[in-house]
Amino acid sequence: MREVLDELLARWEAGQTIGMGTVVATFQSAPRPPGASMLVTEAGEAIGSVSGGCVEGAGYELAQEVMASANALLNEENR
Image: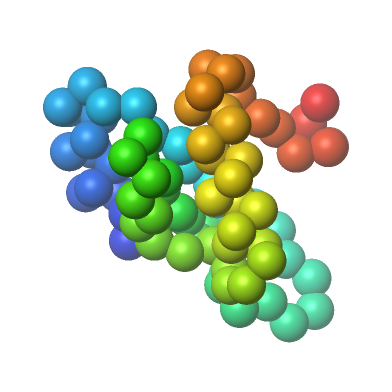
């Protein structure tokens, strides 16, 4: 999360809506460790990374959905 923290704070202070995804756990090999985060802006800009390939794309789409609905999305264990 540290790699996107300055950007997150700047966007928050500017009153912008931001979607954020964070890796909370991994198993076996994973391209990014727990704590890795990605921000998605209302303009569609992606900042940071949570993985790669289809996981990154899925995270991007979920962030856009959350921003549109204004409802937080929790993983299955927290629902």
